[in-house]
Length: 539
Image 1 (cartoon, one colour):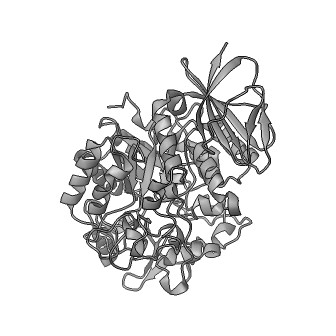
Image 2 (cartoon, rainbow, N blue to C red):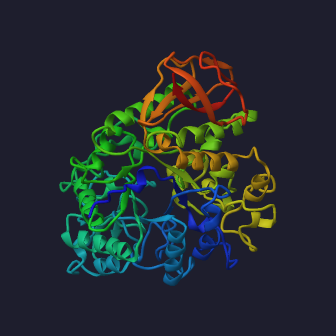
Image 3 (tube, rainbow, N blue to C red):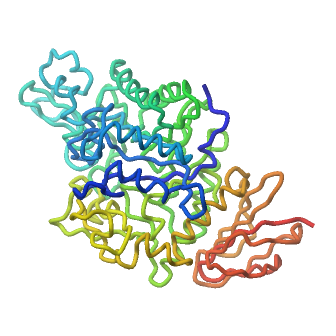
């Protein structure tokens, strides 16, 4: 049955990378019990907590960890390094007790090479599961075509025993499933239903647009790009129209249960293509991640362009969603760093993210200003990232442990963590941020709780204020009962914003500078990198 409440529209989601959240058994790896222990930090029902509404949980399934959980060996289990199924059940119960929803991470396009399905598929050409994966002959002793792997090298691996190539868009240890086989669809959807019956609140669907490949194995046309993989226009090895049907099948399953939500990772910057995954008749993903927004430069014009494009294409399709950081990319506080202005920019960025029309996703640690860590070569864990992100030495730098305290290993564990903590952990940590009323953590808390109390910020309509001065992003969020103005000065120069005469009075709901300034609507002063949220009243 379809949800009437649509809780996900006004929710704030928190992406939680379990390996790096909190370690309770002191093996250097975060675990499910650690998440349970810190739930009150995320939301204890009061404004002393972060106040998030949902957790997107990166994979905790059994995995050999070649791609840190995205290479799944069992879709219906829990990896022992994270805990047990009983631990997960307790997490679900404790989260729900606090009003926190749990979104699992489902990986429909690939499995581990150690998954029983692939082991059986690989056993012989006559295996009942041979067609569960993509096995083909080569061409005159060469590769079947010129497709490349997203993480470097050819997308085809030779199996000496059965004398055929199998396809892997990612690592060789992550063979791609063949979604043209209805048994594959049945198995993956069955795994999703296993978790829905347990009571999880939905799924983040990993690279949904990678699920199907061209039946004729046609070569991709060439294009300009930095890496060899980017020099192909990927119209035959991903972004196939059949992938839309996979999204619809998942939605039909989710709609059998009450209040479930699906958010699709459509790994593409083209919003016109990404928006298709909402479905034609509200029968696809509930939400789709907007990668174009994440690539915005720290300029009002850049953000405005990407926001407007997304609002335009989603208008008749579905509810927007936004993010600035995740486990695959450098943290936005590092991307937008600007010397002494770095903290002010970080406050401005979250004021933007939490006041747009759409569902915001925040990435663990960004609320305290965790920076990317420069990982030494001998400490690298993510072999994938060395190929896919060669300019910043892998994805590890955004996956380091949460800095809880100034104690050794940042209070994450009593043993050396799987990745090193940032050298600044004694200055940047949750404990320190709690004590500083002007910290980024308190900014996040105030904005999230303000969003909860102000309907216009969660569900209101959205319109840009077109008379905003240069490098000021200003917009209205409105309901029948209230009008809120968000004004964000994205530069170092002081700016003056003047409102139309329709509005006579204003109340400051929030200021990134913390000032209790009085407001003259004919001359709203915005200092360098200042953001204001005002409640407006007409005459």
